[in-house]
Length: 181
Image (cartoon, rainbow, N blue to C red; front, top):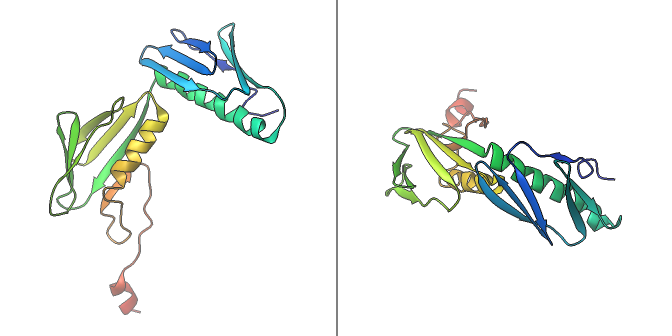
């Protein structure tokens, strides 16, 4: 039995989960989201808990069991508290500014880059050097944060670029340090 898959998902107050065929709809105070489940996985809602089970013990179904349990749990957490990631911009003259729903980045290129905000995701510029991505969908938050980071990834010599707030950049010494030896 899957260690993660066998755990029931306890529903917080104000969260409704409905199952219709292979679609699991989760509704809460922050919004509504749906997860499409493989037909070999069954989802049941009873006594304020969601239980995920599988039809048989084939290798494929065992791997999907924990996956779909976690996807449904992520949807429950998303509609109650939501997800967010912060990005920090380092570098002289590097900055971000809000332009409606979109963000305009100045990252040392000849032109500014306008990042279009996808639907269902909220982008917030806390200060010119910090951007916060938030949504009820954990996968969208991670993908949008990765897309923003890829505009100018951090470089190892001076640390310039866009990085996740908790990310640690391994710095290199550079050629002047090698010449002094």
